[in-house]
Image (cartoon, rainbow over all chains, first blue to last red; front, side):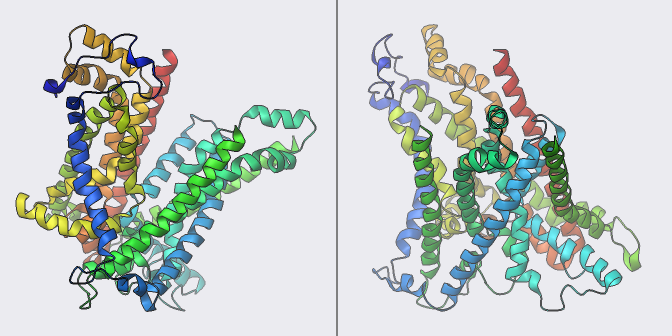
Length: 305
Length: 260
């Protein structure tokens, strides 16, 4: 790194221009960025391109739209529909309950223990839950779980009378709320912290009630970040794999588990690249959710100005 | 005043209901993992954690991976990001794009493209689980980028670097003795996030057939649910301690800034 060091910018020289503060760097200056770019190119861009292009290739490497058209048929299409339903439902549940929980800690002491514990706990469940979350569920409402046994022994209720719902879509919905609600807390807390107490006081001194405050001040300000968080939660649930994989070992009700099927060898001849098409489909859905979010926040930035 | 009381009641109800909702599984895990035969209590599941050789090997793999991934992330990102602010603002957009890209590519999709890549990696570097370092450094990028970017934005990097340079420091000295100490809190934060993420990662390890902690926990669950649940509870508590510590790191930064 020392060998590529050019001398610093001349005082009062090129540093004046805003944005391009460093002027034109010498070719040697670019070398510092090479390791990062090479690494990201190899382990991020290359695999991504492999998936995105592979989706358009047949087994011999020729161009085809066959893989993509398969996405709209049979079990694969059903999996996409179920994945979208699961993500939308758990995003809605997560956003509503998460917003309530966020409000409950935001009105408290900002350096208090309660807030610290909730925020740290939310971080754990939202980002690092994965497999342990699936086992938490087995311990709670699994066949021999604490709640299952309690209800069976004391109330005569059999949780699994209807079906093995825990290992199907209803179970996934329940488990997913355990990382969706916490994610909402993490994403939404900065927005609630941004509400200034003065606005509330202004509302009160003008004779407003709690209702008028939320209807005309808090609500409109929080709506865009709320919708943004909703979209983020949707993308999060749609991308999630670990919890579902640990819980559902047979069958592939949702897209990530279908992809598992393709990777672990249940591949039908001539469909080698179907897994990549599924991957492309997932990227498209996630990108749409994130793209709408970006447009939304841009709109809002204009209003706020 | 009525609304203040109402607010307090509503707040208590929300905290109680959601508190029970989230704590109940933890209690259930503690209860389940201490079940003995015929309704007795036993710590067998907990003591057999250390006796399980497969699990211990996987734990060592995961701990080593969390260190190697955090180190590789720091080595790649810190010089590049500092350099971009000092000399190469043209690269800012592309580096930010690359760092945030993993948020748009689900891990389950990334692993589809990584499978053929890892055939080559394992051919050249052997099939040690430590080769996962590359994949995990990618997963860590978005979190690390944000933490380090915030750290760099909070200091006057240009002035510091120019001062050091005018005193004859080499760029390496600037990086090591000026930049790194000034953003150490951000670096600690980024590293703790990397550690927590690597210890909890399952998707890529399991589908590339590497033996890590979460892969073993999942396998173990098929024969001995008690041990799996005990380890799962430990994982969640450990991640909690890490993130809880992180909340104090963040606070110390706020205080230092306030003092300045």
